[in-house]
Structures are given as C-alpha cells and as structure tokens.
Length: 324
Image (tube, rainbow, N blue to C red; front, side, top):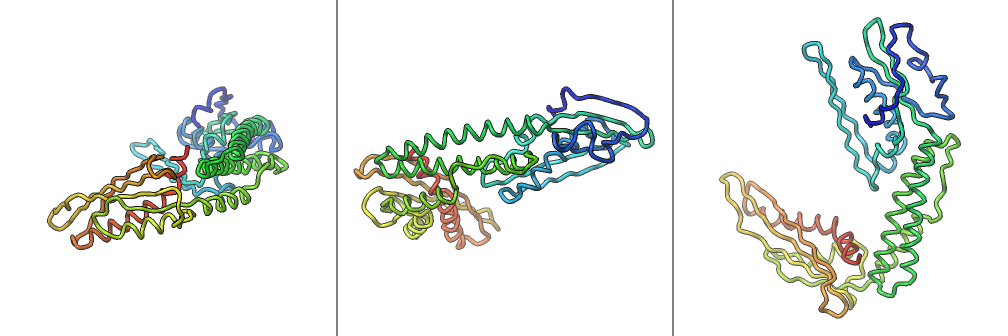
C-alpha cells in the first residue's frame, strides 16, 4: 500500500488545520471517493496509517467471509516513535486487502504547528476501483464458463467433479469481489453473479456422492488407518464402498526419539488414487508428520489423531488436484 503514495499532493503548512482533518474533504466528496486519514510523528508513518485505515473500511465490512486481525504496536525510544503493525488474514477465499485498495493514493498532507504531528489523507477513486474489480470479475466469469462447458462435455466422472470444483472456487472468489464492489459502489449494488454458489455446491455434493471409491491400505505401521481413511473419504463426500476408483493409503513410522523427559515420533502418510482399470496411478501425495509426548505410550495415539486431521483437511483437495 505504501507504493500508492506516489503522485500525492504534499502541503506542509503550519496554518490552521485543513477541513479534511476534521471532516469529509470537499475536494474528494464521498459519492466519488472513499477516504481515510492517518496521523503520526513522521510523515511516512502518517501516510501508511491513512492507507491502512482506508483498507480497514473493507476489512470490517467483509468480515462475513474473512477473519482479519490488525495488530499495531507503538513504542517510543529516545524521542523517536516507531510503529510495528502486522495483518493476519485467514479467509475461505484469497482475500487480499492490497487488491481492494489498488489505486489508492495519498492526496493531501499537513503538519500541525502545535504538536508537529503529521496528517495524511488517503483517497480511492470509486469509479476507477470499481472498473478494476469488474474487470477481475469478468475474468473469473469467463474461467467459470469454460470450466462448466468442459464439465458438460466430459464423460469421466472424476474429471467432471474437478471441473465443477474449479467453477465453485472461481465463484467464491467472485463473491468476495462482489462484496468489495458493493462497498465501493455508492448504490451498493455491485454486479450480481450469473451462477448461484448454493446451486454449484449442491451439484458438487451430488456428483461426489455418485463417485464410486474403494479404500485400500498399503502399509499401516500403527494400526487403525483403514477406519480413518474410510471416515475421511466419507467426510469428503465420496461414495465409499462402490467399485470404481481406488483410494490407497499407507502410514510408515520411524523409530521414536527419546530425549529423556520428552519423546518424538515421525511418520510419513501417503495416499494415491488408482484409476478404474485398477492399475493406472492418477495421482500421489505424501505428508511428513511429527508428534511429541511426555510418555512414549501416547505417541501412537497422537500420531493417529494427526493422520485423521490431515486426511479430513486435505483428502478432497488432493483428489481433485489429481484429476487436474
């Protein structure tokens, strides 16, 4: 966001505070611009805070699809103020604040003669930002249409599911952009989608249930992998037990490491998807796992718990990646 500071208008005046410090800036009215201010003891920090505050407008209003926390720590040493901030964004889609405020800039700056504090005004042209987002949404719609066209022409059930899953992901990304666009759009309408996510999800669930999958165990150094694999496959929505594709797994563990009061166990979890001919390997995935315990008798149970968590989180995406 700091790079957006280029092309700004710098006014370093010690006169009375400009109106944008206290209220909506007349030169950048709300129906044309989104704006936010920031202040600090240094000019660069004031600009960064203004852009950050502009981004927060989006973060707060799109909280339904993301979990965002902003940590800012201010410290002072030898009369110099430093600000350390970090943003952690976990979302069901790739939600990136820098994309939301693409095109934002620092339009005005001012320094108070009373306390020497720097103030900055960040603005975002609604029309320009809206056009950028609509362009991204059109690209996502074009890709979605292509995926659904392929889905309609496929005969292989797994490939059809992969196409549908791709379309679903693309429309999830589009929905986030739509939420952003509705914030930028003064009328709050945005650009409605051609496809309904709920309907795509329902269709994907139906086709997953129609995919016949057999489970098999290659290696199990601990015991209990078969039940875990079947549970994860069912949890992913697959039709477990039918003849068709084979989902094979193995769990190979190493010798436990004894460090006195603490014990460690490493293992490798592997899965592979075999085609309906029973021979061709469609895809392969492995994960290194590690658990620890104060009592060595707890290691196997903790490893199985880790295996269960990994398969439930990763199995569906791995199988869909195999198909593509």
